[in-house]
Image 1 (tube, rainbow, N blue to C red):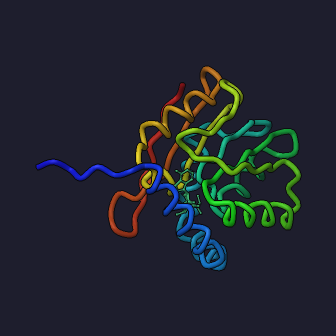
Image 2 (image 1 turned 135 degrees about the vertical axis):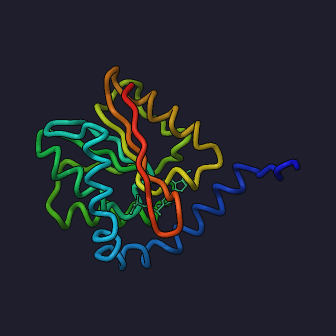
Length: 172
Ligand SMILES: C[S@@+](CC[C@H](N)C(=O)[O-])C[C@H]1O[C@@H](n2cnc3c(N)ncnc32)[C@H](O)[C@@H]1O
């Protein structure tokens, strides 16, 4: 049976619009999401090799819950670039980072399949609960790989079953 093809441009426009609308609700549930994903987030950061001083790319960062964990892990000598397709949810990530006192977080509105960052400019890349929304997830993984220095680590966390999540990682 042939799978129906989707128009990636229309799909992303609709995704952006949905997440712009859902941004306040997702942000309002940050404490519950944080508790639910705490262990998986910790595993994700460990598998990607996030450590003090790392330059980390956070793809589909949403309202930046995992961004705060990354900022804490890398410390003031490290950097986090939080990216997302939705300007509204990413504005909340910026606000949340500022409110938490992290000066090492920057944000950029960007499609995860085409980030526009310099090649080999990050030590680690993560994507928490984002990749399954990409029309072409492999393009998203390739884009993270392109952004990493040789030897850098990637870990993505996606849904695998109802209300559970799994991680996968590789080193460039
Ligand atoms: C379930 S939220 C996860 C947010 C955050 N990473 C977290 O775990 O709290 C999914 C996010 O993926 C983003 N997203 C969906 N498609 C995207 C794409 N093509 N490029 C970048 N971000 C995308 C949405 O805007 C949304 O913020």
